[in-house]
Image (cartoon, rainbow, N blue to C red; front, side, top):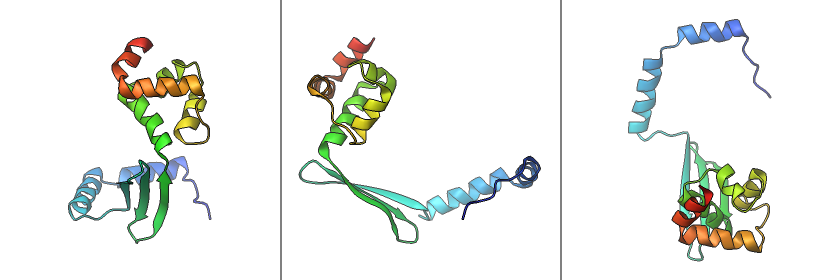
Length: 132
């Protein structure tokens, strides 16, 4: 079942009738009481992989996955350099979509790109300078 979209008039009426301060106070009280809608747990494994479990407040698991060490290394290399996906993708001359495919495990980087990723992980400052 899909939700019905509100008309502009319905949206205006809803917006004028709500009190943001009350909403914020309720959200803060829930956070202080430890009430949550979804919780993400990250658990490192001995072999370098990471287990990510997303649990809903009713106890059901929304997602439970094991992320391979290779996927983690690619994202870590980019994050350590402080470059955006677009900036980092420009270094080996690949598209942003290719970089995203590497980070999500849909594709593997080539030999030259793998070398760049190792350098970025160990020496992020050098990669930042090369990107400038």
